[in-house]
Length: 57
Image (cartoon, rainbow, N blue to C red; front, side, top):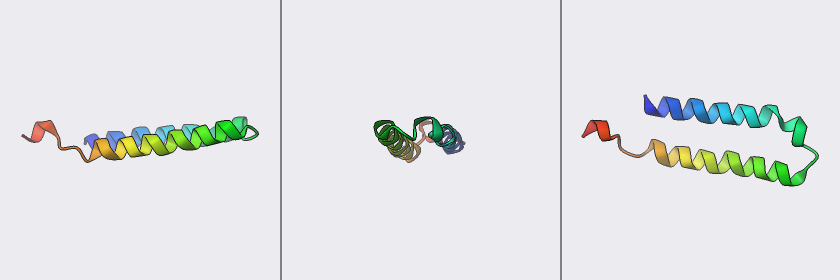
């Protein structure tokens, strides 16, 4: 169940960043920052999702 919430949160963030792309498309620094946010958040979500649940112990 936890992984589903992680996925929903990441997809929400991804949709938010991509849907506002036209607002910052002219600024290269903001495009790089948006890509970095998506990449770093995805990696953090992946690491968090593979951690064992403490409820299972």
